Image (tube, rainbow, N blue to C red):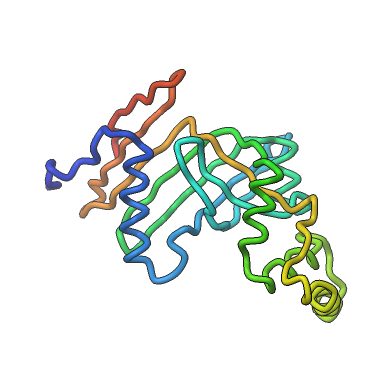
Length: 201
């Protein structure tokens, strides 16, 4: 049987996320900030992919992308999404759902220019998700942009390269337990108040 002293506490979900994320950053071999991002088209066709969490606080969870990409188009057309963190080293996962809004231009600029120069170049050179005739075309663009901005040490942020913040309305914390007697606690936002309940596994 499970040890009931370990049941996920009914605490502030952001504080609980912070505690679990801190543990994951010491235990996961790669990219503890990797998360599955699920979006949908206006006619409800779903798609999912892995992205990286680049900021979080009580206002929400931030990721960056090319708004001309498939995910960017889906976000702009249907600004709601779900996130999933799955940390195999801890045997834990967190699901987060809510609406999306674009970050400010200043936030996008600040993050874009905090990235290594080669990453700025790669993003500026990419027509993300669009057909590519051959890899040499992309690498030639990379070389061209790198040469054009190497003396400046940074690349102007393309206006379509931006970030989105998911403001959670629902957060679910899950711990794997033997014999599939897992622990789940769901937090839902009502007004400005978080309510929580345990869920059957």
